[in-house]
Picture 1 (spheres, protein in one colour):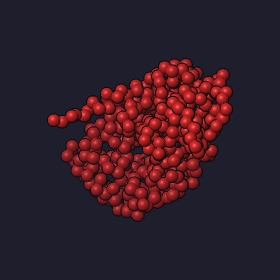
Picture 2: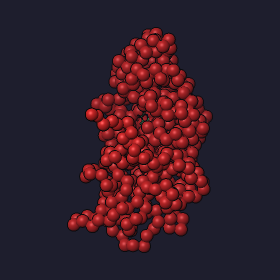
Picture 3: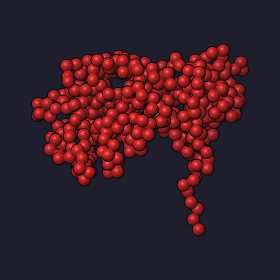
Length: 415
Ligand SMILES: *Cc1c(COP(=O)(O)O)cnc(C)c1O
């Protein structure tokens, strides 16, 4: 999983800090991030790409906690955002607007204005009507919007269908064969400036070949554009590199980066990448306590205090997360369904896991740093979990546990 979460004397630690102590001090459920793991993942990317002009735009939606954004900003990162809210977060965390790229199929006028006022690096435009809208909005502000087109290269990312984005039938990007025509239109619009090209084919990819297939198609467009006199400043090859949750064997960051560099060899444009999951996924875990062990007729249930509202990936994608006991227990091993308290059969964290556990034990749900807290909700009026960042021997609460009153503070009873 990660070298930053290890057992010492039978107790699982994040860096130098006992996760049992964190559970005791901050309660459960609680997300715990390792600063060293976050830094290490970012640094691997930066090291692999040094020697070529590049910008690593962290995909904010993977985990938007301000402490994480601030850490990456200080390491030199830019950001890939998909909403005006994410832009506000980036700015609040000390991120630089001119290192922000704005993706997403449904950008609203107000979000465009926010991004134009802030002065972002580039809008990744995903349709012709969006191109026209952005031209109008920029014109009304007396500004020129830097744009790239997000091209749909129609390649199979070979990942879960819900996180595959680069196929013809997906809603993302502009159709490959319409791209050149749209670039011509964009180049002729008074309030747009064509600066790049972009693609993003999906998430949790565990092979290099789909990335290469996409890059090849994007670069063929770049050549055509050059032939028409449209010169680009950057090529954005998106994010999507997978991590190991179970027994997957995704390419190492260095291997992936090397392949991108090779594909771009001899080209002058700078490279933008938009990694999300690979920077944060294995840098975080979710702590949860076993409330009850329930021995049913057919199955044993470990009913824990984290649920699908805290970690949606198992319910949404049938995703696998490894589970570790925070303190090794001498009781006998049994096979459990690990489930939350929510009234949905889909509310499970893991199926059929052998665990030597007792009621009250604390479990660590591993690889929960990406699309964990960011996808959480208040379903069943459950306050969202606390978030803690460990840094060596130190522990920082980076998001307080929500209070129940906050969940209905905006509501009103009528006469
Ligand atoms: C989600 C997303 C990413 C990041 O994907 P990961 O799989 O987390 O690396 C990058 N770019 C865009 C446009 C996205 O929507």
